[in-house]
Length: 131
Length: 288
Image (cartoon, rainbow over the protein chains, first blue to last red):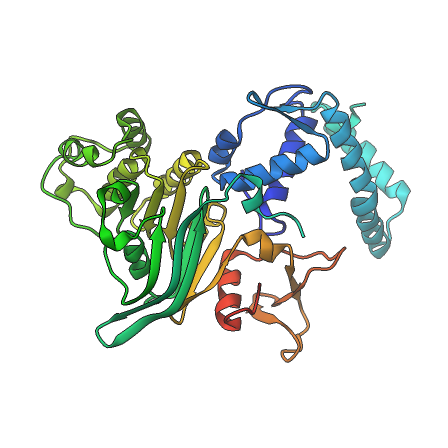
């Protein structure tokens, strides 16, 4: 995993784990790697991973079963999806709309572009069409 | 404030307590009124300019140098007494070192009995990970290879305290990665690492808390989060007002400006290099 300098590492790890849940690499209610294994894989301080796991536990995405390990929650994916969609409308859409205004583009242009690229890329499964 | 990493694993024990340390080489004073506390279960990064006294500090902790003033307690004992019960709980990896004319396997036989919890299976595994040949003679190895042998030895010794002086110096690119993975996996809540380094980029995400040694004392000793939760960096293209800005650094495309983090503020957390520069420039208590 490549880290950037734009946000704290523990939040980047949280984002990475959210992606694993969204992409069903980690399924709901599944056991996930221990703090130590995760720290080793990501080459980071185990205490940073502890901080990430605590954050995901607070938001309800992870559960800690004492003596056994960490598991994704039964509704982990829908929680992450809800959170990501909220962020999409709150952060990414306003930025997109503002750029479109600067460039003089309309929603129609965007729709045409989306349809065009969907036809072009119909070999690939479009992940955003799920649910 | 967001909880720092200290509070989240049970770390109440103080592994190191140095109080009012004074140390000089001859008439040249190095430390005066230096205080330092280190808590169990962390990977500390020790930073400082050349000649700030990083190696001296590490040697005091491991009972190799005796300060003229002040008191030092390591794992509840005084390191100047050099009692075996303490020394068997400390592994010290020097920056540069001569090694005897023998094979790594012979060295292992000679030195491992000094460490009661030495784990030979672990040692073999670490050597394999680091790609070290135990049948090669130590005096014929490169600095990087020797470091890998001693690192494997230190990690397998299972001491409560591991002191590593510039451990990534001389390591090749894959070994640096291996180093980070090995240290991350070897850290437990009962072990404490103190790693001195100039190569902060090698260890940006590994070392935390950070200790900064400057002008004869410890001017910073805190979790990275304690700073990045409070301060952010922003790139501006307009020249900032140098009189009011907390810290400014000229970079490609403008200026990086440090400011206090507000509720909704966007901005980058401090990287270790910037943190170091800010602390050194601001001096004691500048960023806390």
